[in-house]
Image: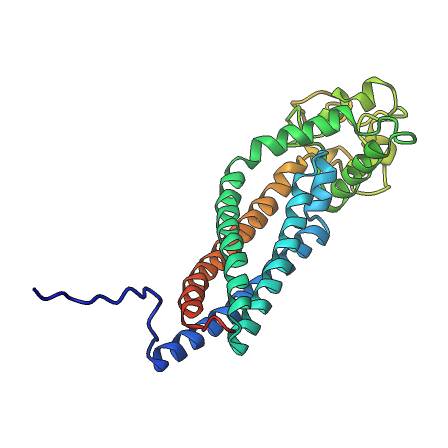
Length: 294
């Protein structure tokens, strides 16, 4: 009776050298692409944090640190991917199996996390509007101008609101001149009800210039039927009021910017994550070809 002999050695068989060279070339190409993506993520993190009205300023504006933390995560993630990519480049160029293995493990974790973060970024953008509106409204009603000398958080919020209102020519949270949530929201705030307003019905930062500032803030009488002395809705022609009060809510100005920033972050994270997943497959293939002694 004849017996067939089976090779019990299940170790990977040597690949064709040309195939190995092709894998190395493709992997090096993707490492370069991912490095460029990591630099982009790092740069976007700095941009969203330090831009004139980036995540740091938005966090101060709405009294929520979520957006500032998001920028720091991008910066840390981009830097981590750059380090992982450098490890991979050295491992591939020198054919160090241990470095390729280390790169492989770190890459598997970061690629999945980056891809998930990008998807969640799009989900959060869709939920952004109501959450930010509520936060902004709470910040104005409860913290603006309240105990600014003794409470550093309230002082930061107040300065952030004054800065954004002047720069974006807006006042209050959302809506137009006939809304109770734009300029009129200040008359529903602690700043107004606790008499911290020095006789003003809106902050000076809601006014276009120092001209007619007493009239604009409501410290003196203005044209009949004009804000801020009268509640919404307003009567008469705004051009006859004799001063310029910003009547558009600040959320209406910032909302397109925040959505645009969220889409940029989400798209970049997903694209880089996809390239990293391809790099992951190529790294596994190359790892199997490298001898144990390296």
